[in-house]
Length: 578
DNA sequence: GCCGTTTTCGGCCCGACTGTTTTCAGTCG
Image (cartoon, rainbow, N blue to C red):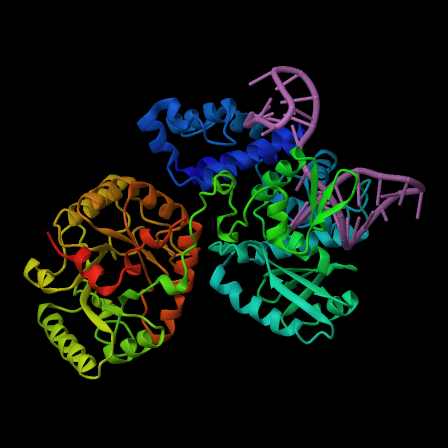
């Protein structure tokens, strides 16, 4: 079982225990174990295979009991405790918990009183007016349940970060029109640059809170106002995205920003730390036990109050950032200006929409020193991949273009390159003689995704062992929310990549973000360089580098861990083939 | 169930909004 599957079992155990009315701290432990499993850069399976039970020790949040269950799942593919809980509470109840406004208490009551076992039965009961008869329910909550079911059935649960970005910008612009508004900052997982975002949280300070609320709910994209209070409101947009807003005093803005940026697990740890120091943290500030205000206007001051330096939002995922902050060992955040060039760019020759010259012009405007033109090879027929003759012609065109740039005294170089296909048998789709003439070789898998992990790993490892590859492109092939990653043992691939001086790509295309944040942590640990590239098919895609940079920051990468932070001369030395 | 600058036992983050129960529990983030 993969980490995400193990995590799902823990989440379900937590939900089932909560439905049963079990100890809430125990519930929280399972939920926490699920989050830890999900966010772990190493595969639990690999840790267990390599180190046995000891390999699983020392993971914060995983104790005796959850460790035993992890081992059970790895060995048997299931968890007896989980199955046992499912005999007591039907699995349909887990779906019911997802209905907005229905939590464990209400769900359990509905189940007990009406024998409801599935979301469809819940819908029927509500439609027939049987819910409002129950103690603690009324006509309003019954209608709310019906709406919640409708929403759940139609709504996408999570949104790609790039889907949310335009809405975030739109709300910021919209709220700027409110008289007296001071700060408007989207927080939450959006601010942490998480690859998918569940909802958008916006924090504001304003002299007139009422005016902010009134204007907020009138945004033209709003479909439904879920709640509207003095300082907090929630709406759902036509696109299905939920947006929350908070209005705060200037004095509390930093504390609120810290709180609403999350992650939840990070905040719990920070508050726990505060508590141990005799402090109390809420979204209104840091306070002593006697209620005296300590800090809150600036986020930095909140962290300082608990003896820590400011922690960048991308790191706030409880992956050791608090311990690192304590030791002064936080990674130096990668900056946009650290990136010297883009190493994965397509042109009209294959499936891009602009010419080599146009792409280069656009890259120069971003202040880059270099750009690799990496059109597809012939195996990718649908993208009009280049055969030997066409790539030779392109090389000549690149040489001529570089000559022209030199004559114009422009400090920019186009690298002769390719995105060569790794065929199903692990061979490359250009002959060695061609690949040796190129400055840089990106190699990617574009077909035959449904291999076993063993086959896929061998396929990519075989390609690396040719010694001709500088970068493995989009190493897992996933498309966020659309296509699962193909099965591949990245730890093995990285070990081989390290030997052959091959980098792994962090593809910044917002649908891909591949490597992901956890994989970046693994690459860093294994000492493999990461190339942050955009896979641009248009001049407009080059700006997607931001998504790659922030994903890299989430993966703790620093300037030294990234291939394309190197100046051209240094880069060319690294790219030199053995 | 997890964990330790107060602890191997006894704690475990904190507050807003809603609906319904006339004083608060449940849900959510």
